Length: 317
View 1: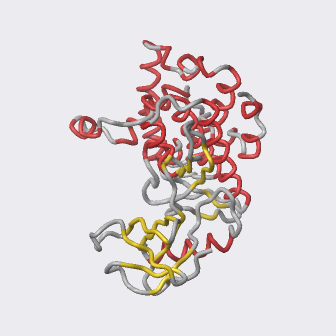
View 2 (view 1 turned 90 degrees about the vertical axis):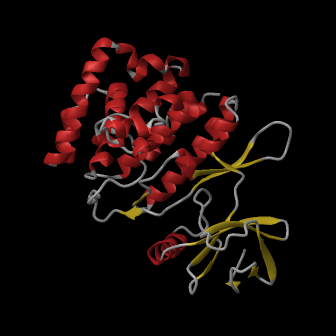
């Protein structure tokens, strides 16, 4: 275990007497890769609020298997040291589109276990997405997953007394937010489940239907990312139930949802094959059922993470 850091960032950092060597020369960077002996680490200078949140999380989840917590810190400099991982789920799929099905599911299973750890203590992540899932590979000719963890807790939040989170603006990445998350109202554990369902679709080969690559075109036509994502998701997983509007319970948020629902309904009327249950058939009925439950548009009927982990899909090869 790494214990303390002393010194500055002009060229080296000391960890237990060993020198962590920079891999970057630009000392204005707030994050860089470093080495101590044969081990690699990520050294990150963070804001004071995030530093304090990280200390709290590390204490609450001491001994975690699936959450990437820092292994060292320096309070005076606001620095956190994390174990280094080979890749992320996002990069892994992009770099190796042929990654075998069983290895993809292994990463997803580990991620579900990470969410379970968080939810067991009433924490929600709010930003579950493929590039926040870090992966280590076994060294060998055949690519196999040694470990995967969920990281980046910048906006993690502890729910109090079962109350949903409401923020001034939508937080997290627009591509992976739940419908209620797009309105900034009614974010709960169920919102994490929805995001995880999207990650499952991405991991199993549906990335082109989820990723936004045309931000400039959207801006040119006056379309926000939230509008584009909602119209897509309502097309895939709709129709939109009244329960979603009741859950949000916010005039502005519900107006956005209704507008995007009308667009999605018109799309499906002319292109019924845009529904998830059409284009996901190759996943098989068990996988379809598991993902459909997670991405239902009614937050109150989404499964808990325990129910997700108990689904028969995980027993399928």
